[in-house]
Amino acid sequence: MLKLNPRRCEVLSDSILGLLVVLPPFTLIALMYDCGHLDGRDPVCSSPALQGIASFLQGMILLTAFGGFVVYLPIVIGAYINSTRYKYRAWKAGTLRKLSFTFIIWLITTCFVGLIVAAIVVDLLAFA
Image (cartoon, rainbow, N blue to C red):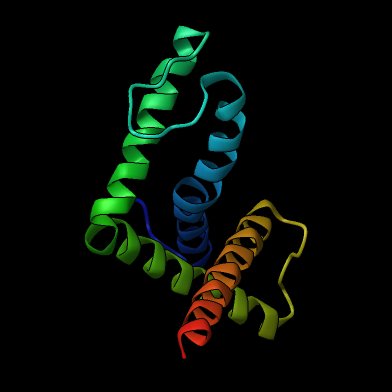
């Protein structure tokens, strides 16, 4: 049986963040050069292998847009809170590895979260 110790739980949370938050934007940017914009129509890529990836990414974007509050957002928020909690514990214990792959994924996610919060605040202040 696989036990979920703190290290494995942190890696699991960071893996979820990497797959759901970090990987899609970078993949989207990379596919835009070959497949064009993913705007709701069937993507047309020069390579058949990229066609499947582009269709999957477009489906993920649609899931996020229409079902994000029910499916996508709770998973991402839970993984982010869990990862942050373990990073804080490691920082307090003095064992935080700042050059590890999991820390870099968490840092990129934190930057995305900061940008989203800043955009919401600016948008709310514009209407005030």
